[in-house]
Every structure is written in C-alpha cells, then in structure tokens.
Image (cartoon, rainbow, N blue to C red):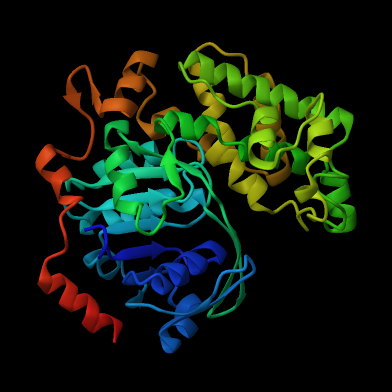
Length: 401
C-alpha cells in the first residue's frame, strides 16, 4: 500500500488544507473531508488547493481526488485517514467514521493532545466499529501553516521530527512504514501515554492565557504572548504545572520531557529557569496573544489536554492542585464545567484500570489477556504492506481526472 496509498484528510482548516494540498502535490491520491459543505465549496469547484511555501520548497496546485462532506465517501478509498481537527472534535469524527471503516485502514490524529487515540478507539468500539483499523496519534502537528483564502494554503515549515505512537504500540512500526513515503519525519513516539504526557500545550496555553486575562481583554491581544506575557511569577506557575505533569508521568512509568528539556530540544533555548528559557527563544518574539479569551487555548486545551492529565493524577495519587486551579479558573471564565465536558477517565473507558492494566493496553492492546482493540490480527497487519489492487488504482485515477 505504501507507494500508492490513498489519503483522506478530515478537516479543512489551516492545517487540513496544507496537508491535503501537500499530499496531492507529492502524488498521493487525496480526499478532503469537511463536515460543513459550505467551507469547501471553493475547493470543490476548483478541484484542489493552491499551496504556497515559505520554506524554500516549491508549491503549486494540489489537485484532489475528491472533496466531500460525507463520511462514507471520505472513508471509501482511504488507506490512511489523517484527522486534522481540534481535539474537541475527535469524538464526533470517530462517531461519523465508525460505520464506514474497513480492515487495514490507519487513522492518525494530528495531534492527539492528551489521550486522543484512547478516546477515538473507545468511541469507535462504542458505535459498533469492528473493523481491524489502527488508531495512532502524533505528538504535535507536522506543519506550521495557515490559509490565505478559500482554496489556498501556505506552509511556513515542516517539522523535522514528530513523535508518533499507535494504539497499541506494537503496531507503531507498521504505521510508520505506511506513512514513510509521504512523511519520513514521523518517528517512534513510544506509546500513546508518552505522546499524551509530552503534550506541552497543556502546560503553556491555558495558564498563560488565563493569567493574562486582563491584558488580553484590555488590548484584544495586542502584546507579545510569550515574551511580555511570561513574567517571573507567571513562569513559576508554569513550572508548578510542569512538575505535576512530570509526576503524573512518573506515576504511570513514563519518562516525560520537562518544559526546559523540550525548549532546548525543539528550539535550542536554554536558561536557568523557565522564564529565562522562554525569553531566550527567538521564535517566540513577535507572536501575538489571542485576541479574546474565547480561544482554543482554553476551550480546547483545558478539556482535551489538562483535564485528562489532572484526572490521571487524581486516579493515581498525584497532587495536581495547580492543574485543578487552572481548570477551575477556565470553568469560571467560560461559565462551563470543563471537568464534566472534558476527557474524563470514564469517557476514556479507563477509570477502573490500574497502572499495569493501562500500560498493557497502550503497549499490547490487551488487559489481562482480553483483546481491547478493534479486532486487529496478524492477517490484518499484513494488509498494511500490500499494494492496492489494480481496480482500486483505476478508481483513484478516474476520480482524480
């Protein structure tokens, strides 16, 4: 399947358009799905997306095989389904895909945030999907991109290395092999607990937004988010959140990266503390703050990133008072119970599991010898490396024309 893989990209925001156009330009038959047809009318009429690149590589017109708002059509030809939506939409996407998936397909969440793959797989099971599909999640989104128009996209940068893990981890190499022709940048991320617990946005985004609420509302975001928004006191709160995250990871047997280690790895930014390291990161200069508190840094990152982190801490005896404080502030500001709406352990289906059982599930897909996955077996695994049948390739060629 590798060289001829048909991709479906779910989501036509900044990232989804960039990914769909790039895949098409690389020669992969690509379908673009968006739940709201009006958002992709221009793309459907043009037959593709104009891609510009600011990283020195050529762009062009990415002609798409299909543009649709129908889940059955989106899944029909797909070998690999790339979900590029806010993590708050993962549940709805899984429910929409569940009746239409087939054996051997791969679904990648770009990114999963915290426990995205676990939630996605559970929703598929709950809605009757018994196809032998593999759900995987990336640690972060591979592109820095934006949309400049209704049928345009721009790529500023493609990350050089992005951790990825399948659920369970024993399938990760097969997923990496399938993605390699298009995305050699994906690397083994360990397991989905590791990719989830290294979610740095959970630490930076909600706290930095809420602690600067007055400034955001007074200036409509007219200040430098990281450079002016991070002061010594704010940085100390970020450090407290990060310590809790690392302790939760340790309780689960995972060696997570600290925020300081991550800044050094990703940006070669160092400092004696988080305040110094953030201000020593040149890439943060010029990044403006959100223009409003009604922003994904709260309504996505709190329920989908911070709530499951804190819930795991509470389940396994870790003090997460700083996380709880930020979550409670978000609930007050948005007049919303994010503890109820977020990725709680019961929603993930893991509320009764021990550390050993959770680790066994993310690594092997079983708990006490019982298969908790989606019916994936060795025969299905072999399909990941089979070339597409000639009839399928013909259909792909026809749909591109």
